[in-house]
Length: 312
Image 1 (cartoon, helix red, strand yellow):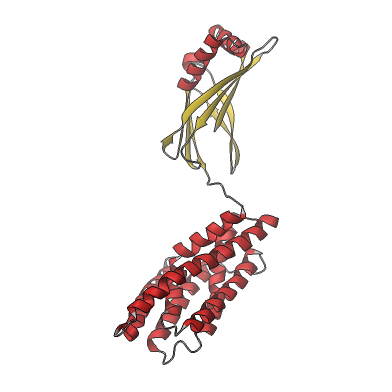
Image 2 (cartoon, helix red, strand yellow):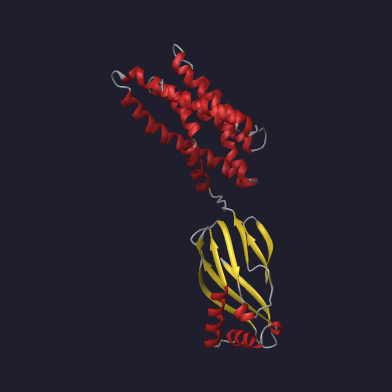
């Protein structure tokens, strides 16, 4: 972070103007005095952590110059959060002074005032959005592995799967379906509000879990339900990209990268979940484990459904 202050020399106390002039003209002693005054006069904190003042540069104040500049480098441990800047130059500029500044952040620019009435300012710094291929792939992986409703839906889908071919059909159908609606929604062709899609996602979880418990052969046409309900989940995935406000080539990169990340995260989950399910389903657990898993999913899904309908 860079703090930069521009000063009108004729308006400064004579001693301070002389120090800045000498510092700008390579007087080492004056430069050290000015730098120490600058570090004492400005403090910065970001996301609750104190930012460390580093190099101080004095510019201007040469022959026929009427302005001097002071620049301070600050190193912060965080890149976003609440930014607190406190500026108190009274020891250097005198009791009565006021500075005007432009604070530039990723979300835009705003003017701030430091003076006798207020020596500090606070502003929120938004998290910057990385837009590289790997960043979107990583976002997709994180979303699926922390999206517990999507993971529970996969648990319900695979709980009664019989054999590798059944798993392949179910996962492939879900992947194709949510890829379609993710693309459609992200490109703005057709969207569904979150207040509608979130309860529907919960309803798909409950439906599949109950089918596992009460249908005679729940695995027989499971890939069809997987595809149909995957269309619903795709709209849920799209809300993540929609919040970023991507456009043009960045949107295309985000759509492909995020979708790839979702599939990688989904594959990671399946590779971890299936062996655990197979191990628990040995012997007496062959019938009991899928039913216990489905019952747990049904209860959680019902709670989410009620919450999303009546609470939002």
